[in-house]
Length: 269
Image (tube, rainbow, N blue to C red; front, side, top):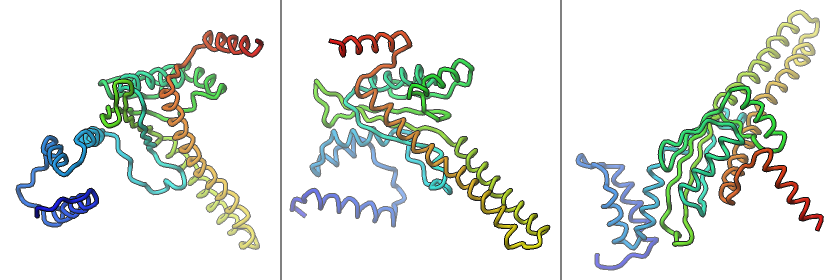
């Protein structure tokens, strides 16, 4: 047992050990402490900072939700994205807070240095502001609520370059359910109407599909529109994080006018 193992062998041994332990767990198995895990990883040649980064990610409460029925049809009820940014945790959370509050009209609650909770405002001013932002190509974050978590990453960090992993969860369970219910109701009404028409008509083979098929197709289209909505939400979240990473900040009406005037002056030179 004195020979040294390469990285692939270490991975295989550890994976096999996990499988054996799962098949026959001992009664006194109480888990592994973080310090013990870091020490063990260091002993087999794994960077301890990589283990610390992995442990920080493991402690995040946001996880990718399991697949549910009708996700392929109407999209997932929870959209989760994850990105690594060349920013500090404070810069990441503060930047997201600024965009979510001003452009997307959400109420934000920063409960810790690395977490942010936001929910959709329903007042008239927020609705009008979202309409104006949407007309400009912003404010298209169609989510009921958001949870943001960010943790610092040690590996790759230098005095001039910080690294943060951010994970965002957006809840769209309500609009998903509305689309599924609406589509199902239309399809059901089409089948019921077709059956009633077939009963009263002379030629049932023509009357039933003439009513049931169009209504079913429309119902499917309504339910299917949820998939496009989920894809747009995911894209908008990625776009939001990219803006924060570039250091962009939302500007008000006066700021936009000043920026356009400056751009016009530069072009006229």
